[in-house]
Image (tube, rainbow, N blue to C red; front, side, top):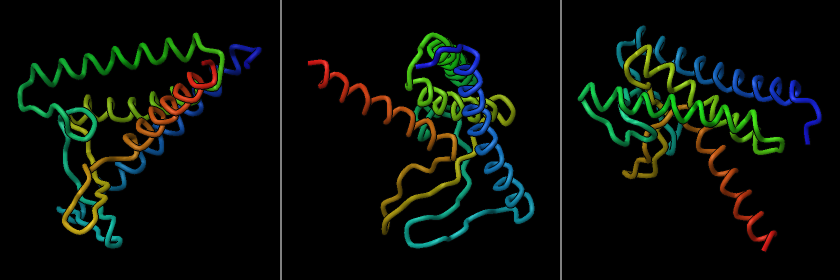
Length: 162
């Protein structure tokens, strides 16, 4: 697909930077609102609120812990996974690099927060009546979309190759 490795790297880099910047901007905006108002609970409609929480776990608050050892261990594994994703991006030569770049951009956004704030600010609250989905952020959206696209492609290519 890509004849020139530098073009592939440049496109991947641009995707990662755009997603990282979009995530940082959204979190910066929310955190500035909280700083000014001391609390944030923005009601958009009957399905969407912005409500800030601090997540010390991984995606959707899984493995949250107050223990420093667990926190640092999870952060270490996230760094390793990011390195593996980067290696995969550099080795692959097809459209999967775009989805891996989406995952990497989102993951780097959350990793930045884990290191800088010692927690990840999540603020997007989707709900219906009293059922609330996990509160998440922009980085989580891109990580989830990238994973879903990779699964979708694998399922269809496995079916096609059979």
